[in-house]
Amino acid sequence: MPVFICHQGFTGVFDEYGFKEYQLPASPKATSQRTEETWQAFINAHLEHFNQDPTTQLQTYVRPTWDAIVDSAIHAEKGLESLIKRIRPDAFVLDNVIMFPAIANAGVPWTRVVSCAETEIPDPAVPPYLSGMAADDPERGHFEAAYLEATAPAHRRYNAFRRRRGLAALPPGRFLETSPHLNLLLAPEAVRYQRQHPLPEDLFVFLEGCVREEAQFDPPPLPVNDEPIIYLSFGSLGAIDTELIGRMIEVFATFPARFFVNVGGFIESYQKVPDNVYLGSWFPQPSIVAQADLFIHHGGNNSFCEALYYGVPSLIMPYCWDGHDNGLRAAQTGTGIHMQRDTWTPEQLCDAMLTLLHDKSLRERMLRISRHMTKANGASMAASSILRALGQ
Image 1 (cartoon, helix red, strand yellow):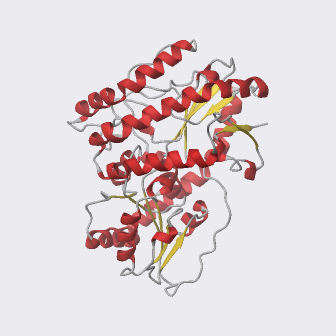
Image 2 (cartoon, rainbow, N blue to C red):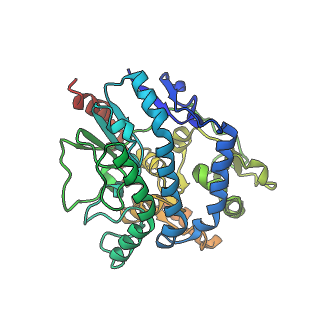
Image 3 (cartoon, one colour):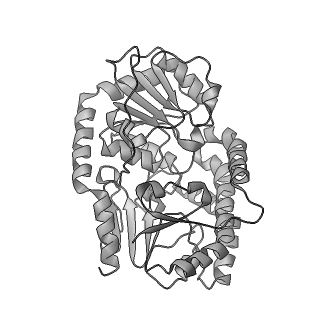
């Protein structure tokens, strides 16, 4: 029987799907409100860095983010170890970017889920992780060296922590080893790289999409009900950039489409909303994407894969992490357009939307991709692969 161990901020998420949840114990001084305030402060501090190129972000955003991730692993260890002893699982499925020693030391098989971009697993023919560059970019070596320099302090701390917990140190820049049992990559064939060193098929399974099921969304009536539907969501991080979203809404007012815009907890920041724009603090994303004609997003792997799964072109404006990699990959594979989030003009935004809405060959290609992904049933393949790794 599957159960979920999660941070207290995810309480109720898995319960809605009928799974039992176990929350990691919070530190004595922590409260949900304080944790939320800390996270909000972190994002506020880095908002100005979201317009930087990936190389510049290595020092301003990637370095402090890895510091925070290492801190979280260290702080979670004791509570996680206690939970594992209590639950006594037969196996683990780890969807994270860092290894928790308590899991590695539990003495049971574990599966690694690569739910970010495929670039997380290195290869000479695959671009460097978080770089937003092509595999053969002449600046590749410079970026890789800069990445190792930026992550070195957090990596040293993490390796020291691993050694204290009886684990071997990892190579520079690596915070999570591949599993000797099973590795699942959320990398659909349409955007997958041709690796120089193919991954062993008995240990690495590529999934065509594992799309969640959520509530049905029925678009409310708008004055332009016959126009295409365009959905905009920059995720929980991107919603804080109300200036960017506000600037986009001004352009939307001039464009013949119905826009549904996820603004997170900042809905009161928008005073003048055009008649063809509907703002929401939250949308059941799979349902709205399935009905959309275009999806504007930040390039998060979940959003990118959902767009592919439903055959919807992507207009990607990345601001950090693997969004840079997926933005370029959408352009390379003809599944979307990659735009910088701070340099576009209203005319360029309108031209990009028109292209993605009316390119007939693109629409046909996206339909073929959707048919292939839905037929493959990635969720079922993931489940069967995990059971097979357990010998069941």
